[in-house]
Image (cartoon, rainbow, N blue to C red; front, side, top):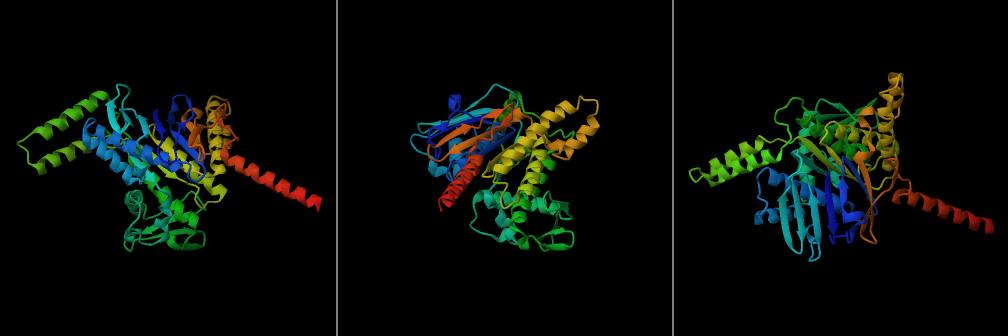
Amino acid sequence: MTRLKIRDFGPILSGCTEEGGWIDIRKTTLFIGNQGSGKSTVAKLYSALSWIEKAIVKGQIKPGDLKTYNRFLKQLNFQRIDSYITETTEIEYAGRAYHISYKAGKFKARKNDGNGYLLPKIMYVPAERNFLGVVDRPDKLKNLPSPLYAFLDEYDHARNLYSKGIDLPIGNARFEYDSLNKIAHISGGNYKLRLSEGSSGFQSTVPLYLVTRYLTESLSRENDPSIKTQSIEDQRKLAKEIERIINDTSLSEEVRQEYLRQLSARYKPACLINIVEEPEQNLFPQSQRKLLNSLLEFTNANDGNKLLITTHSPYLINYLSIAIQGAYLYNAIKNSKNSVELTNKLEEIIPVKAVLNSKDAVIYQMDEEKGTISRLADFEGIPSDKNYLNQSIREGNILFDKLLEIEEEL
């Protein structure tokens, strides 16, 4: 399990209220809270630190090198959160391969002696992704945030791969792509129109769904010898080989870079870290459920995959609870006499490929006034309904009751 500790970084002031101040990043992790509470800040910081750990493992940078710290700052700048660094900022990242920290202006990275490390593909899906669906040629857009350009590269690969068409998880619709003219279409029943002319829900969902499916399928090839856990010994061998190439004075710079490129290619990504901002964007509640089920199914496709979500939607919390309860029932059903019949009934509620064990899920609430992060309580693994999102719904009911009281006085 990866863990993260943050203090005095942007909207995050005193950090996580849990013992030790650690935020656990599990297979599926959700952050909820008001605007400006730090949901995206934590997500972006986790993305940056995961990238740094990966770069160290691959030998692109060295733990004790000044270049590592510079890369760290560049990653924060890439996510536009570098201005959050202050004299009192404290950051700790406990990954599978490396422990990374920043405190009192000092950056450190040390190797862990624990379990093996799965080299990840890290995908940050920004909220601005709907821009890619609004226009027919998103590649012509300029001055977009850097993460959106990185996401666009994967989106371009995905829509070309699925150009002949794939079914979408919402609206009984289908995606098709005219790769010659670079125009995306959605169709369903008796209609076919450009994605740029479709609803805002499709414009937000299509890029997210296509990229997640594309990356998941590309990593899920069975019996691929390039997909393997990297032990500490593997990392040492890789580091030793990289050092040998770098110190070989008989090699020209071009040859050296080519050797390093070939060496890195031997360590292909084995899992997907999928970081998604507001998957519910512009979607009807039933569509939110179907999209979440798809994201969970993609996450379950590989033991090493992770899904991190920032959200304002109370529906996603409820649907996540269904996925957790579904996992509990599915584990019990498998050992029952009428397992086939009960599994079919369960499938009508939630696909068994999308169920989620409670130990693999965690939800954190962000308080924008206190600058804190607190873990949402659960009851036998089911997230508590006493969360910030449901609280807002209750507040609406209370306000309406007060209006009725005024009406009675009239």
